[in-house]
Image 1 (tube, rainbow, N blue to C red):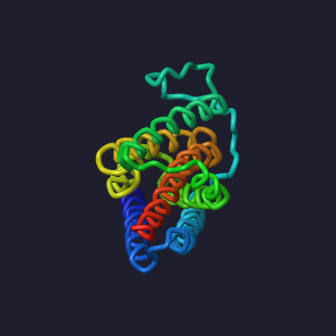
Image 2 (image 1 turned 60 degrees about the horizontal axis):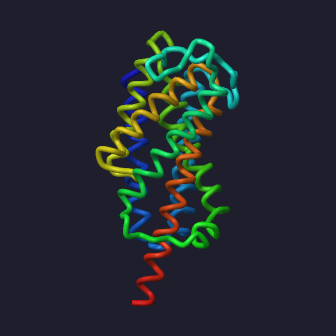
Length: 231
């Protein structure tokens, strides 16, 4: 079952790349592209959720939000720490790292007025919710539900890290920094789901990162369109 679910999740991940590339060619407008991409990929995520739940053990939405954190002592986590405190801490720290890397990869010369970012807030929040949910369902929830629970959870977390991190070579942030960041996040979020029994912290932390990424993506895309029209 491990190999089967690795293949299924890998295929689903590659399909996200293919859908993104295909829709981007036919939908140069960022809003049109995101609506179609998010809708199509969410269907894939929900399908894997259902299949893995039928053959495995369903994971809840919340779980135990204040479950104790184990196995992360090398990150400075103490035996008294819970996912309530660690979840918020990692969300903030990873957000800062994500912002720094995405800005560096986007280019220092890109200057985006605050008003351009502000007008996109509602749509960015919506797409961040759907995109983070889709990727959590595919790369974490379906994998954890589908794989035999007799396998050590650190192996499941490692599999998620390899699949999710590898595919982010083509994402944003991308290349080697993107692989390392996405791989670490996948590994950490797998721990959160396994130890809390719910998707909440994984979804929340992922959502925060996507808000930052999509805010920059939307803003830079619109600034590029404005420059094209005025040139």
